[in-house]
Length: 149
Image (cartoon, rainbow, N blue to C red; front, top):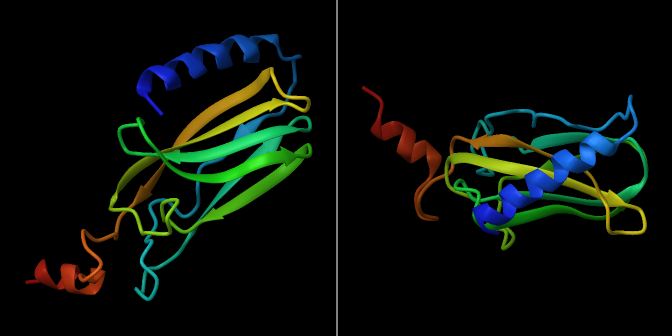
């Protein structure tokens, strides 16, 4: 997904948001914990939870982008959701199941009208991974030991 595409989605979202009735309750929460460790077996390992609130039923897309915002790394939710509170747990892996490297990753929530078409809500936030490693052969414990006195 290119940055220009994301910017055009944001422009559409602002127009859609201004058309929503006053008091509409849409929300994309911050992920918790943040930052988080995505290496199973490490003492600090903890997937992160992303909460979101929908004011009405709709088609939902929740996805994680590359740090530069130009590539789709993982789709967390894709489908119909009812109005209300929802959450998804993300383990910090990409769409192939590989742990992503340490960094700050934007995640984006798009909500479309139940029948498709109209964008009802668009928001984004940042998830920070802090203990991913560069290669599968390294362990976070080994990397940390390199920096100890």
